[in-house]
Length: 199
Image 1 (tube, helix red, strand yellow):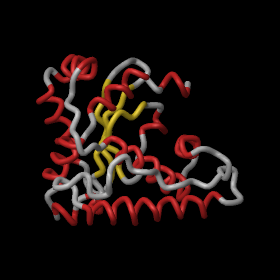
Image 2 (cartoon, one colour):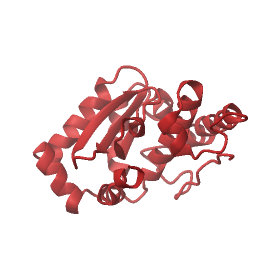
Image 3 (tube, one colour):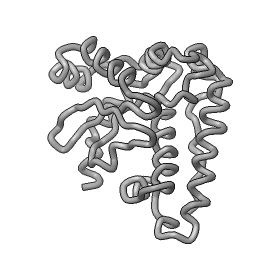
């Protein structure tokens, strides 16, 4: 099975001014393309050659895992962003308030995790089999699927995600991602409770 680049649901310049077209050309067009190409080369002739991307992420390790997870993570990240922001509402809002006390407290904890992760990685809002929300900081290519958690949203804190636009200002980039997140989609992911699909 050859893994293909995901298609964006918005133009390459659709996230301006918070995320520039130049950043998207490098982040989506070069970094994600490289991970995709590397994955296809690495799985050729292995037990993973005919497995889905999610199966590879759940079961692989080493270089195959790293490239598969980065393809999955980036695809999920870009899918979660939207040029027309959808605010937090409905059942997601109620669940976040029940868990964190308020939306402001949730945002503060999410941003604290993003700023506290040393080096490269991903910040995830996840949902587990006990119907609990959690904020997870995972280094490098870390992915919640390997820990039996359902990903709901993510912030990419690799420097290549933000350095062209924000240089060393990771906090400003994380704020931009917050503003661009399609929270309606995040809510739909929670309501589907994808955990039950796989287990």
